[in-house]
Structures are given as C-alpha cells and as structure tokens.
Length: 132
Image (cartoon, rainbow, N blue to C red; front, side, top):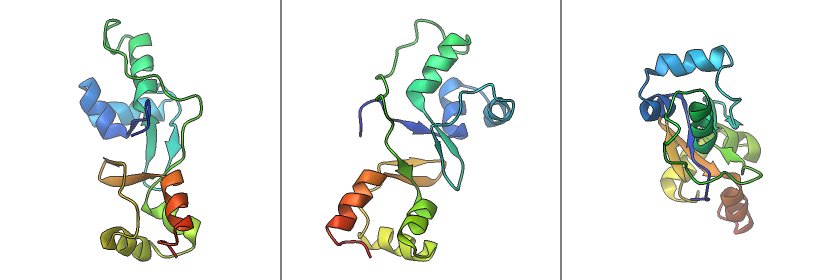
C-alpha cells in the first residue's frame, strides 16, 4: 500500500472514531468533515490521515492519539468498478468479469463493500495488454 494513503468511507470513519455511521453522514452533509479526497460513483472517500488530523483538531480524538503516516503531497487517483468501466468504455459487467477472471490487478482496498484500485495499477495492466 502507498505510505500515507488509506481511503475510508463513512462506515470506516464511524468504526474508527466510535460513532454511529449516521453521525459521519451528518458531518459530511453539514460540511463539518473535511472535503472527501475521492468521489467515486458509489460514495465519497476520505484519506484516513486527514480524518485523524481533523478529529484531533476538533477534539473528536485525544491530542495524544497516535498519528498515522503523513499523506503524500499529491494523493493518487483511486477508482472503483464504475470508474474503471467508464474509463475503459466497457460495461460494469465486463469489469466485474475482468476482476473475477484475474485480468485486473488485485484491488488495494475494500471499503464499504467497494473494491478500490490505484489508477496507476490499471494503467500498468493496460500497457501489459491484460485489459481490453
């Protein structure tokens, strides 16, 4: 995994901060949370180091909470099945079949039942002609 990159959705934020998922969705709706690092077709995703910094700053985590690795200056692009289908101009079913058949590189994360890839992994796979 890339150092300092840990995508989390509302459910993971709620679990890690010990609050109900509805609270996190409310924070997002009322713009209490920082803006999401990634917006996928399925949902917004944040980078966990950013959430930890916000939670410590707002008193939602104690100031002595262990800090996660610092995020990179530029976050990598993360995609899910819908974004892969859109980018490659194929159906969602085709991408699902690619994933099941091993034609996609292994996903990096599963968040809120959504498989997530680094776009750079897919670009490499495309250059190797394992896609399309």
